[in-house]
Length: 371
Image 1 (tube, rainbow, N blue to C red):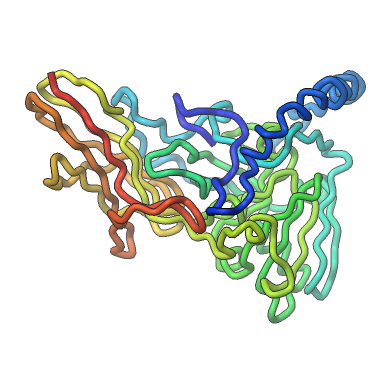
Image 2 (image 1 turned 60 degrees about the vertical axis):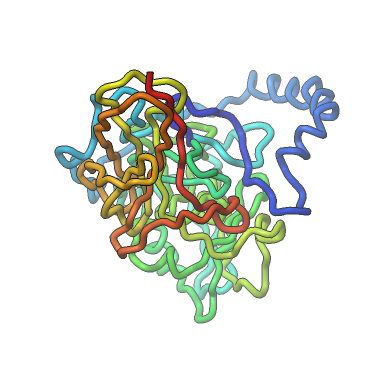
């Protein structure tokens, strides 16, 4: 899930103090990984010689409910440095625990739904593709997103509504958590209520008009609007167990992250990025997000004085919103900040907080010198 110019690769949430850091663990395991590269990755190469998933074999059908065309004015394209409204698949940030991207064939993929349900069930890929498909624009965010960071991206997803499938299974009273497992056994725990409250939670098979890329969960992943990915965005999903939060602590919860993970109202300056800029009109621009609430307003702070930014048209309340402010820049050093207000009336806080345990807060701040 990256934006243009943002770092790519495999990243994980930063750990709370005194908790294991998976990224550091992987770095510390570099020597072992090097050995594994000779054997494991070499073995993977040989495996790929005899078996390689062809994502193009999946043909996305016409959705039963097609997302409306992007509203006029929802995408600003003429400001250099501003993130594009849709993040290209190749630049979308990636966060998972897979050292080697799983290869899951649509012919062998199955999803098992069990636990606190009246009718345990298993569906295969053909079953899933026969279900009504929906298109919906959704911005995903990683909880390890620092203020102003790049671990966020927006895409048009296609998939079957997860709530419909779970209703068929019959969720039993008291089932507060859905434990989702990928093909490697990695587990994420998401609250049942937001999945079932009518938002466009889906078993996604398409991303920006194409079948899911392998590194983004091909052939099937979960997308839940409004929740950080560490509880909701299970890729290569093959298992869902209905249970309670008291009965099971999911992987990241065991490591000190919150059980509930609504995405916080935040904003970012994409341009200027800092350094020296020329005097005259300087376009300050970026994106703001409050998934499943929507952005109502954005303000730009210049040396402590706040100014109302201009907003692109809102697409859905599940996506980010582009904004800009033309600044008549004068010579000298200046501090630029941004803050957003969502449609509930909440304005993001200036209080700085690290990402753990449930998302970073604070104003994105950029220092510039006007020549």
